[in-house]
Length: 261
Ligand SMILES: NC(=O)c1ccc[n+]([C@@H]2O[C@H](COP(=O)([O-])OP(=O)(O)OC[C@H]3O[C@@H](n4cnc5c(N)ncnc54)[C@H](O)[C@@H]3O)[C@@H](O)[C@H]2O)c1
Image (tube, rainbow, N blue to C red; front, top):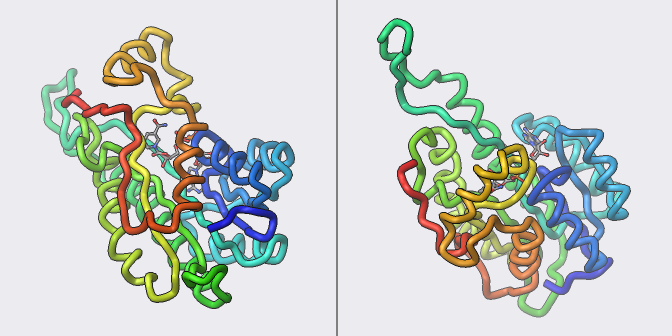
């Protein structure tokens, strides 16, 4: 897909981290970008910085998603690009021994459900409501391309660590649905790919001590550092531009393979 000012994009989680960097990179190519996020303050500020628009949207809420897409389409026209970056992390084992009493407690269902709701069902909702708009518009080029969808899984989809049962399940779901959705939408010229990031320096990590950041960085074979959100954005742009990339899950991790802990 040729990126220019005739193309509109929706980026969820666009107020922060990987989504914010992707929104900025797309805007730099001239794309009209709509940021969807819960964080209104950061979202509005970032949208103003990159000349885009912000729409408050909880990706787990079907009506919110429908309304935000309608508002974005009114502002910029039908989105040809959807980038799903909204997500949360959580650290909890499948069970834990309570120090004080010695009792063994299971992972609570509420936390598990919340992570699945945001990371997996939120991604599904965005794709299912966005693709019907993409399917209804004319192709952009002689290959018949109508749109491109990018999801954000994680290396935890493949090598989840201790305490990542909920997160890995959610990201495994995102990775697993990539190919069937790409196949479902192939007749309409809509490509679907997922990025599996390793360790990226976003607000999620910026809160860690320098020592913790150094030790995480040292676990990456090469380059032995945390990734920059701009490097994620670079791959997202390449996925949009390279029509042969379809139905794939791409690790972006400096050869990192996560250890059990
Ligand atoms: N940073 C990393 O190293 C890393 C590694 C692997 C995967 N990921 C994934 O990349 C994605 C982006 O992560 P990040 O590091 O940029 O995190 P981040 O916290 O900087 O950004 C996530 C954004 O998602 C938004 N969000 C959360 N719940 C939402 C909801 N229900 N509706 C709408 N927006 C919501 C937040 O407000 C936030 O702005 C996440 O899915 C994360 O799991 C990140």
